[in-house]
Amino acid sequence: MRTQLRERQEYAQADLGKWQFYTGFALGVRKNGRSGCPRPATDHVLHTAKGCKKNGDNIMKRIILASTLSISASAAVAGNLDEPVVEPVPTPPAPVVTAAPDTEWTGFYGGLQYGQGEADLSLGGASASEDFDAFGVHGGYNHDFGRYVLGGELMYNDISGDNGGDGDLTSLRARAGMDLGRFMPYVTAGVSHLSLASGGADISENGFTYGVGAEYLVSERFSVGLEYTKSDFSDAGGVAGADLDTDKVQLRASYRF
Image (cartoon, rainbow, N blue to C red; front, side, top):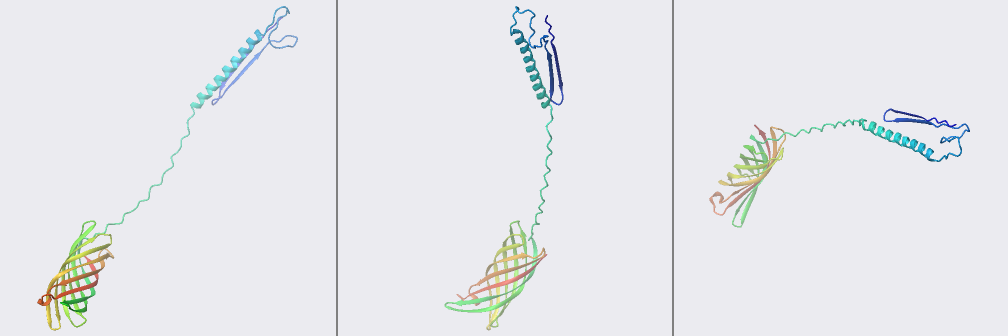
């Protein structure tokens, strides 16, 4: 007598992407204690491995099916997981650089100057020279065009020679400078007038003057400077071929209105 009992149990549950499968089966066993494929009671009935193979194939199919379902469920759960949100790192604001205020040279100005110079008189192959002090006042106007500064100036100097000669030197000049902030180098050129009394002779001549200089703004209203100028007078004293040249260097202080 042969009894066969086959029980199959399948359990599946999903918890955060995991499936657990439990598959149980029980095969009937004979009273002789041997397990496996059911065996017929009579020995003349052939018992082949066909029945065992059929049972084994069914078990293998269920194991493969359970594994496939587990992998699919894990992939589905993993696809639903939210990616972590990365908070952006705040960037500190760039430091604010305050631009330096532009320097403005436009306006009227006036001031004082003092310096020393030398006068040279030449006629033919003969020459004479004399040193002098020069002190005076000046006034003018500048217009700042941004990079360049243009203006005009009137200057008066009282000159005193070392040999007793005294006179007046007046000039009217144009100035062209470069705005370098508080510093302004410039060139100047114009006309000059010389009135000189020396050795009983009076000289009154008009000539050409030119030079270079530089000014520095100590404050918004006050500037200091240094200037070199040269003046040329031809036919001095009405004498043909008599040339009188003056060179002078002066310190300047100006107040801007």
